[in-house]
Each structure stands twice: as C-alpha cells, then as structure tokens.
Amino acid sequence: MYLVVRRGAVEELDRLGELAGAAAVACLRAFADEPAVAQWRPRPGKVVLRARSPAQWERVLAEPHAGDEEAVVAIPPRRRSERGEALTKLQAMSTALAPPPRDGRGPVTYALNPRAPMSTGKTLAQIAHAAVLAAGDEAWVAAGCPARVIAPDEAGWDALTGAAECAGEIADAGLTELPAGTITVRVLRAPTPP
Picture 1 (cartoon, helix red, strand yellow):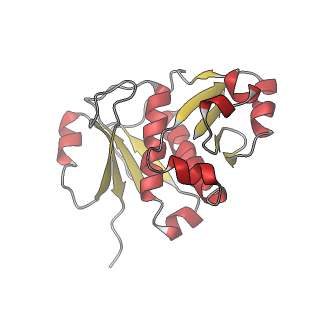
Picture 2 (cartoon, rainbow, N blue to C red):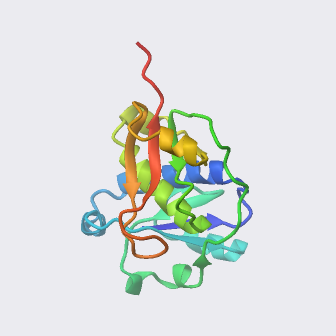
C-alpha cells in the first residue's frame, strides 16, 4: 500500500498520523475485493511518499485511492513494477513534523515507542498498521477512525505494557530502519463506559 502525503497540508504528527491511519483503513475497505489486496495481506507493507507540488498531488488523486484528499491518501497495494509515473516521481516522506504530545487519549491512541526512533515516513507507516489492527471496531471506523498519537517517555511507554487499555502492538518486520520484532506502536483503546 502507498500512503501519499501532500506537502505542507498538515504540520503535526498527531493529526497526520490520525489521517494516515484513517486512509489506510478506508483503502482496505474500498478495495477489499481487489486481488492485490488479498495478495498483500500476508505481508502488509506500506510505503509513505510525499507529493511536493500541486501537479504531483493531482496525479496522485487521479489514481484509485481512499483518504483525505486535502492531506493524505492511500493507494491500494501494487507491485513496485506497477507503480506508474504518479508514484515513481515521488520521494519518501521525510519531512520533519511537530512532535505529538507525551500523553493524551482519543477513542484510539497510537503510542510511539521512545526506544525505536523512526523517520517520519516510517512512523506514519507504523501508525497505519496500528489503525488497520484497530479497524475491527465498526463504530470507530464509521466515525472516521478518530485517534491521537502520543510520544510517551520511556517510563510512560513501559507503564503501557500489559495495561488494560492496550489493545495490541505493532512489531516491525525489520525490512528497513529497525530490527525485526521491534515494537513500534501500542494501540490503546478508550475504556468502554459501563
């Protein structure tokens, strides 16, 4: 899957992470019947690219996609050889963004591992994996996948281990920036009211 971010659309990792996660979930649902999606699921890689100019963004929007057309869209999985000109002309997302807060909660919260420093693009890809993990909650998906991104310190991260609010973890495959098995994101769910 390709996540494409429009340069300058969003300057905060918290908000861009929420939008990237929602775009990934929307893409998988919109293109669920595509054979490429079924082939992708066993090894669900995500590549995050940046559209630097309005012309690049327009070419991206001409591709089949899902997401927020003002900031970030997800393009269904395809082989690298099938990317087409719209994607091959784009660069990896590496733009520095305003960091997320150390704490806070949303209906779903993506907590980033402070011991696993990642590029912006890698961070967004890991958040998108976390959103797909959380997407079994139909009410959350119907609400547009509202979420927060937080960057706890090491003590805050450790306190989330085994916490009741921790609904899952994303373990990196080890193909790019981190060793295989590194936990990059913890998915936290707001407590359900009694």
